[in-house]
Image 1 (tube, helix red, strand yellow):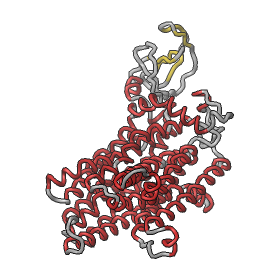
Image 2: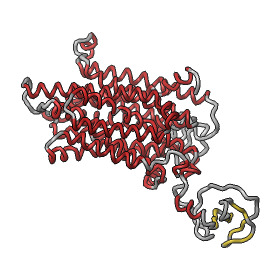
Image 3: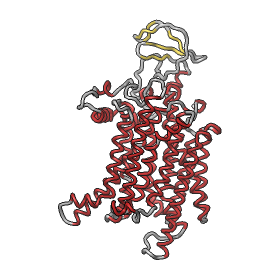
Image 4: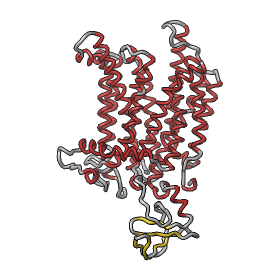
Length: 554
């Protein structure tokens, strides 16, 4: 990955990532006023916004693992990206026009018309959040397929994090602009219609560019044979696994995807529950770290409006308390924008930081920076200090978007090192005999070398050969043939583990939504929002010390 052409191609490859983040950030930011105008009570608002993450938790492992196995003529990841992108486009069309659609589809009274409008809005919001969040998983897997070297993978995900942060900056700014007085407003119908029309244009352009560049990249890159993003490179095609006939219309790409997902569901969720040790430790640290960051991002503006500016959101419009709250919300939005800007900066230099200080130091220092910043925000009443500390939390946001995915790529590149069974490795040290299929293998006690011997053991023939290093993880029980567990590390795809990482992000949004309100009611202070994020950050630091960053950590 040297030269400006390679970096430009990587930028274009991640353009859909930026477009997705713009649409999700702007759409979800603009949705609450639309729901309130449609008659949805404020107490149900968080429940509506939680539909997408909950659905994502259920379907992300299925989509991630199915993309590992399915192999249509369009590639492994692109069919899923296309389908999820269609869901995003449908949501962007439904949300601003829910009232018009309800008026055309309604057959009864005004009450039924309003109920249908609310239903369409909820459907659009859930579809946008679900498809937008889940679409990141095949995009991450696509990067992993195309950039397999550890340094190249690190640069690829640094660009991915940069585009997410850039999309967040643009997405948070677009709803703040007044589109109602523009020229397009008279043609499109108002603020919401102008905003969502612009989002559709941005998303369609980014989708087409990324799909075209990913196709050219796969065709021109000199990569070693393997499970790449090419329909003809993957040896275990879904046609062989599930008898899909891609040549016929009946078993085209869409039918192949549906059959793959349906056939693999039990095995996928079994694999989802049997996670390798290195991934368990990484995901646990990732979950706690994301809970800290998301608790901060979800409730920071409310903390500034009520806690720092001492405003009251339920006060009558035009009163001093309501004006102070609205001013605090604007200042809180500025803090989140600065957080995205800081995250964009650190995404650009993330590869250089890792080369200079190492992944462990960068990960831990980012979470320490976040936790200290959250503590300062809890204790300070100065608006400039709080805003500056909120900007510093962008370091952790950039790190969590980059390093876990780089580490996962590294784990999968050297599966025989990082995904061995722990019990097996301990038994190897004591010289137990290992059997697999019709071969009996014994380990030398002193140097750990493997010797092949001829003869008969428990009814299995074995033979003699020279000594050689044999790191393959096999199950051992005192020279008795033992069946391998269903979850063989060689069959585990990177898409499934990316799905697990993305599930930690979604779960970190669900938990604060359900429990933070009760915590604030119990403490009677919105400072509990930021204090909770600091506590989660400290727990994330503790579990991050157990992450396997390289072989010496095993």
